[in-house]
Amino acid sequence: MDFASMTIKEIKEAVSNLEVISDDLIEKLALDSRKGVQKISSSILKARKREQMLKEKFEQMSRYEKGLRERGYKLIGGIDEAGRGPLAGPVVAAVVILDEDTYIPGLDDSKKLSESKREELFEIIQEKALGVGVGIVDNRRIDEINILQATYQGMKEAISSLEVDPDYLLIDAETLPGIAIAQKGIVEGDANSVSIAAASIVAKVTRDRMLLEYDKEYPEYGFSSHKGYGTAYHIEALKEHGPTPIHRKSFKIVSKFS
Image (cartoon, rainbow, N blue to C red; front, side):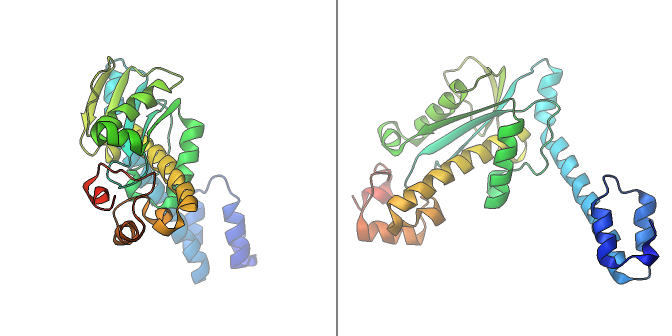
């Protein structure tokens, strides 16, 4: 590639169309006298470094799954939930089974990701996962049996909705009573297991989408922004308007305004 006869724009376009960028090419870009061409080289190196960091993080977060596969387990389901703390809306649990060879760069605890990144990863998980299950328990059931039991119910419903049966479960910070499947609770599992991280994203995105729909029905409460959590705006709305049919009346803050 003769860079001398090319503009910076042409070089950038030509490099972006390459499937493989060799070390020699990167060095050639770096040695070009033009700062703009040197920046292209720097950008490529930064992208490579980020890609390597993502691979290393994914590998580190796969250690639980790898250890279980070495023990003979094949279908390892990661479980997490979204919505235990909010004052309104359901609690949503998800279970995700990833194949041994599946690589999804950027998987992480859903709380550490932007909304747009969660949405992007949600679609990738749906496409690549061996199995995805979701369980949704509404506020009325939460009021009947309490949030912990509702969370367990959601997790069991998520498992039941799978098209493939897991032979081991990794669960974020919990162990799930009343099931025969081998399991392990992992503290901060959504940041330490790729399967649980994937489940945290599925649960979070599923619940957030539901709250966006509730926002259309009850626009004065601001569900699109706080997703049912007890923000100052939400508390003021409760004071002014009282609870909606989706509020958890068994929660003390909500019951004050019932």
